Length: 364
Image (cartoon, rainbow, N blue to C red; front, side, top):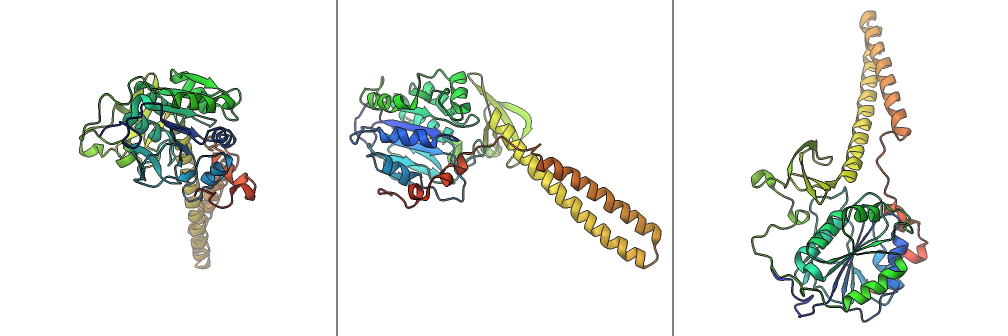
């Protein structure tokens, strides 16, 4: 495949803009798209963390905020300048030459859609024509993707952490990536407009993708048990989602973990995923202990009615032990001891007034 031209043309500007945000990023992205001109010579792709089974009102909100049409992306549709493509819930949004691809591939950073797959595939396909923008958010999704954009000579932009409601994602990128611009939101839109009208250094890829190049893990997973192992070395840790062995790799000092089937994590998202897995295991333990207590209660009554007092006492001791264990674990859970870092972005749209989120917007 070749990355020349957004829709097969010979355009050579920075005409692919990929934007990622999480908690605290909704207001900034609205302000951002409100400043784009109608004649913007670039296609805009936006990913934000969103619950898989929810209905996203983001395209309608963005379509009303500015002059550009905004829609949920559809699999296989062409990439057209002057449009905003939003990743739908439960789908990774990936870029191929001139087209959008949606995938239900393995989650990354415990999310689908995730920011990194969009950024990676944009960089892989469009190289130095890509502008990657990272806004407010928790943890560090987007850092690996910005590393890929920089590796392919694209432009990396992050929101100034000083104004971000949740600065973790911008801070992670600043620490790990040689970002080109750290700007307040008010300056990011003019910067994107300027870059979209400036030619990229190499006018796209100089090394077109070979037909046998492996697809991004977010597209198909890795299938590494049947072929090559994931990059890096075995970590001795297991995937929070599927339990498979995680392989550890490093990119410019940034650690990344991937399992055999393709689930991907950074250090922070792995900690969050393990915390979620621990919480599930603890609730399962509470359930098992309460079921054990109920069974012992039934057997204690039965044996006592039959005059088997020694057996009844043994079952009654089991009831006491199980009740005590379940109560102690339940108390830990309710105190939040095992709770993972919270990403409030999932609820952000739900908190907006109904008049702002209802409907699908004028463009979709």
